[in-house]
Amino acid sequence: MRRITVLDSSVANRIAAGEVVERPASVVKELVENSIDADARTITVEIKKGGISYIRVSDDGIGMDEEDAVIAFERHATSKIRTSDDLDNITTLGFRGEALSSICAVAHVELFSNTSSSKAGIHVVAKAGEIIKHEEIGHPKGTTVIVRNLFYNTPARMKFLKKDSTEAVHVSSIVEKFILGHPEISIRYINNGREVFFTPGA
Image 1 (cartoon, rainbow, N blue to C red):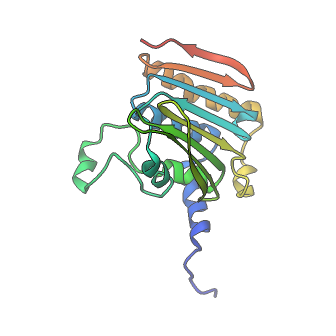
Image 2: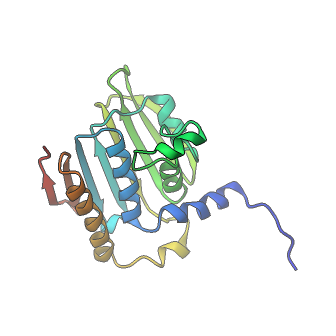
């Protein structure tokens, strides 16, 4: 009988990511929820090849400064909860602090963000759960997250995905739900360079 061992953190993170990120539509859902929680009035979702090769979610929300942008990639990093009492009064869509860390564990991720009070924007590059670099850049207020090569390091997860067109349908369904649930927000959805949905917001 094999002895019980503690998993390496990178392996553990990839397993945990599977609870949050099941397919490209899961990534889109998590990122758009973050945008809505950031008080965005305009959100753009773009995917290529069903979202497996490329996902971009951009918003004009409150954005993040350098410190928040870096810590956002850590597990359980959240701005919505401070104490256990806050769990009884959650009004946001996301609160677990799992989204970015889970996505980053199974994909290549770039984040661009800026706040209205920051002198410069921030660019963070992460891969396999680790931040590779972060640097100051020019960027308007708001946040853009680009996800490439989803499940590149988890082939078992990749083989359960359907063909690109089917995965795109799942993404479209998620975006439609956000459009119906948030008519006040302008939402644009682009699939392989073609605009599929656009709502002007209220």
